Image 1 (cartoon, protein in one colour):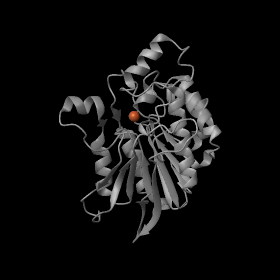
Image 2 (image 1 turned 135 degrees about the vertical axis):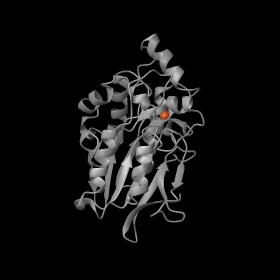
Image 3 (image 1 turned 90 degrees about the horizontal axis):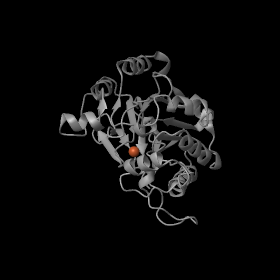
Length: 287
Ligand SMILES: [Fe+2]
């Protein structure tokens, strides 16, 4: 694998919204935070982002959570339909759920992987420690979502997940590979107050940090913040200017190009896989 495309925060809606329940419409509007609640526009943005990833020659596409607005079954179906129409090869796509994907049911993600997204189940987040090996890169998709009220947006990186990732990091069979954790929430503290961090942050963030500090090979792709982030870690093993934590902008916040396309290009992230001394690194591709 030479190039990864990173998309995030799609927030797909139920295409039957005008006919769907008042409860769904109310909740979708509430969590859409002022964005137009138009299923066609959201789907169009995803289709354009997938098209841009393919056109850029990406060998693998990572979508780091908030695939849907509420984790409703029909939203997952709609999301799968857009991927199907884009003709993306399931072996070359890795999906993880975000907080929005768990607002409807604690089983929503599991059922989606057994149902409309089953063709992506092999390469997407299931049990912690699962790896998706693609040449010099081993992707570790992690589910940080929790079933909770729509007033909370936090996630959790569990002690189990930390142990499972650690086992992969010390596995001699993966010694020469870049280990890339894919999760929805940022592993950095995002808020000044503990209350806001509780509502919107990642519980167990310090476990991810601990792994990053001790394992210079580890890199992270995340979403949730709806903006691009490059974080350089100034710790032993870190090198000046070399980011190891990458956040992607939200596809749902892209400009709508209308039914005929055109306009501003989708803001997908692209990383090239590069040898950097003894390490394999993801290097951002400037557009
Ligand atoms: Fe989001």
